[in-house]
Structures are given as structure tokens and as C-alpha cells.
Amino acid sequence: MKISQDIRREHGGGLKASEIEAGMAEKSKEFAAAGNRVYLPLAE
Image 1 (cartoon, one colour):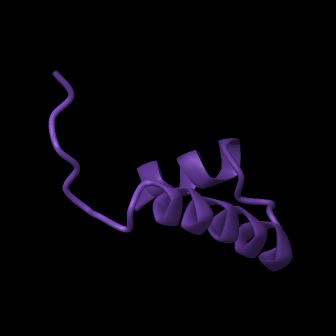
Image 2 (cartoon, helix red, strand yellow):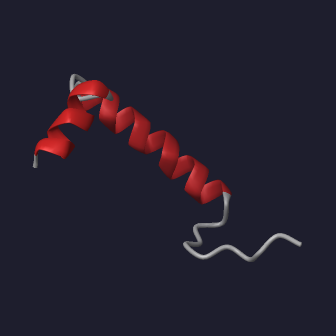
């Protein structure tokens, strides 16, 4: 879709596979640090 193409071009469509993998690894560590839970309890 044109909208998706525009967003990729403006916000990271030129990233290399190694950069994408490094970003995903970082997010994976953040997810693990949060307890590997998709649904977190509500903050009170």
C-alpha cells in the first residue's frame, strides 16, 4: 500500500538487516526484563 511505502521510506526503509536484528534483540531484552508477559497488570 502507498501509505506503508511512504512510512517505510520516511522512517527507516533504508535500514540494513543487521540493524533491524539488533533493534529486535534490544526489544526482546526489554520484554524479558518486563517479565515476558503480554498483558501487564494495571499500575495503581
